[in-house]
Length: 147
Image 1 (cartoon, one colour):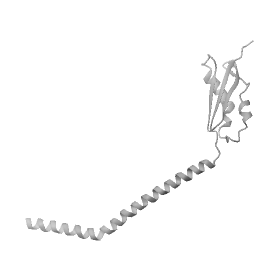
Image 2 (tube, rainbow, N blue to C red):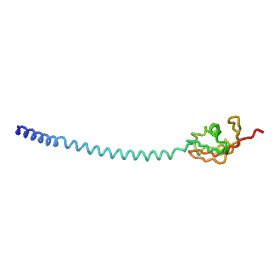
Image 3 (cartoon, helix red, strand yellow):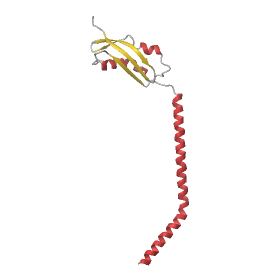
Image 4 (cartoon, rainbow, N blue to C red):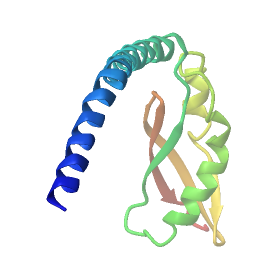
């Protein structure tokens, strides 16, 4: 029994040695191909990042968001409805090129407007406009008396 086990282990070891010589070279070749492909992938992704950043700098900046900062004084319950009405006036500016925007129009879209909210009228005054990809309006809204 020991002799059979010894021959089996000797055969197993001989088989492993033969397989190592037969397949070892091709496995090593595949390993180095895999490593070379990893390096190529890294280089390609780095080139892609550089090309994407260059592409972004060539595109004109577009208005992506409009933010309204509204000062209503003490009546803050009407601010959401007032914000919605004012946003309807300026929402057409989203997607426009920042450098191509007519700056007097940005100011005059809201300046000296009267907006009606819940049977009350509010007079709008533009305090400041910040022009970038995020267009920010600083607006003062005062309630118009019913006199």
